[in-house]
Amino acid sequence: MAVAVGGVGALAAIAAGPSLAADGPWGYRLGERHPARQVNLCETEAEARELAGIFRKYGVRPGFAALSNAPACARRVAAVEPLEVLETIVVSPDSAEAYRVTFVRVRIEGEATLPVLVTTRPVVEEP
Image 1: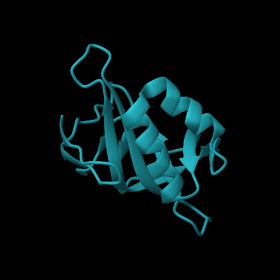
Image 2: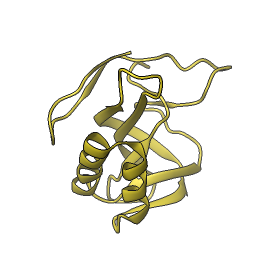
Image 3: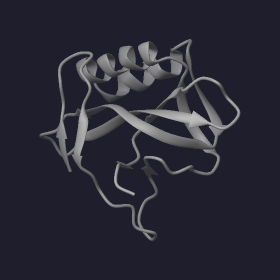
Image 4: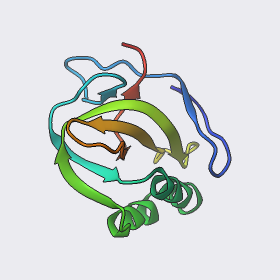
């Protein structure tokens, strides 16, 4: 998967994404509503971007610690419809421990706001 990653606050775009096979690991597809699952959601894009900076600068463990302690972020069960990839952070891209964290604006039926999903699952843009 090719990823263009910008500087702090820059948006990253997935240039070519993985496919989601029926028998492979599950992930998210933009524009497709996904059944209710436990997800990490941030209420605001500003909070999500702050977390992205922590993941980028300090790595996975501090990033997830910050996510757990962020006042505007929470783990909850929700059915989400991914709308747009805001940013993808690849932590330690040159090592065997490479880790991808993607921030995705989502719609939740019946809610007026568009929270940001924080996920390590694949996110694909093609239908």
